[in-house]
Image 1 (cartoon, rainbow, N blue to C red):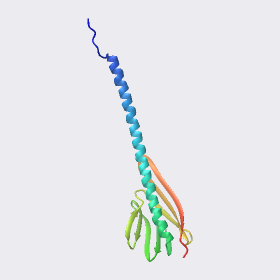
Image 2 (image 1 turned 180 degrees about the vertical axis):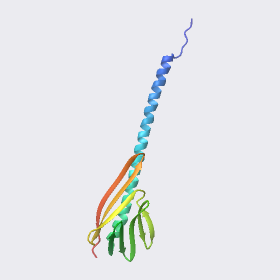
Image 3 (image 1 turned 90 degrees about the vertical axis):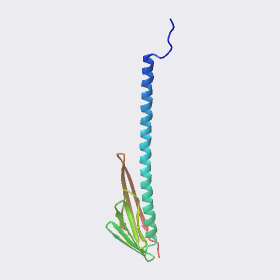
Image 4 (image 1 turned 135 degrees about the vertical axis):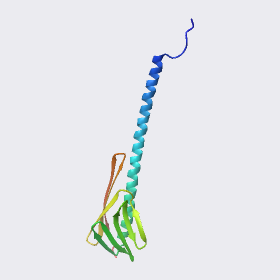
Length: 148
């Protein structure tokens, strides 16, 4: 009698079980890496948005002739141009005689406080939720006007 060559049922079930375990581990690793990448991209976008707002405000405050801080608003005059910063729906609005522009991107909010006419303290806060993870950004900076 000739013996048939092949795999037994026990061997097939063992290989199938090992395959399922390996595939689930690879899938779990892929999901974890994807979530981490999405979170870091969102954090990077928020930090870039905060930097953009700070860059504009610092530049305008340093060259300002006059500064007025009101609740939720910074109004200044620089070289004959009137500029106003406020919180807008999706970020920070910079309105001037040259036009309006939305800065900072989604979730960025700004608050201003006066430094006695010599400058402004800027507080930036941002919050965004990505896949049930809350990402926050917080920056505080004081900017002084340049001496005339």
